[in-house]
Length: 213
Image (cartoon, rainbow, N blue to C red; front, side, top):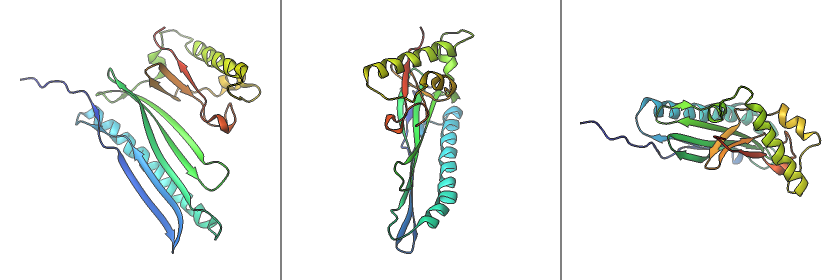
């Protein structure tokens, strides 16, 4: 008898936490949480291996170069440094699994350094999905996406809702990357790094792009 198809599900996330000390002084705390999927298909195992390796790469950075910097900066008035990896699932339906991950490093400066990554997968195949695949087929597909991004920025600026750097129309085009996106029920969410097209107070500028139109 043929086995019934079982929709992929989230499993307990991978977790890691370690505190590094010099005697009684805490130098650095590393905290990680990354996604894992329930199932034993090759595609799901491939996704799990990808995020296991991603967590390991950040861990090596933090427990290597960053820890050495924390040791060099340590002093009686220096707060402990912190590094973290976390994720948020933004869509998990109709054979698509999407999320964003954020790595942060707090070294006691004015603002922590934050990096965001977005992913979309076909499950259970374990195949990454590109932004171009999700948009209507056309040769010059970036043009409509950037036009929508600029339209939304212009509306926010006119309404006084957000602050963007001078020259944002050019910056939005030059710094756009089709790899920086994830999916929500409203469509694709394309985003920019912090302090790329807007001041840090705006976080990661994110724009919703409708699909299938």
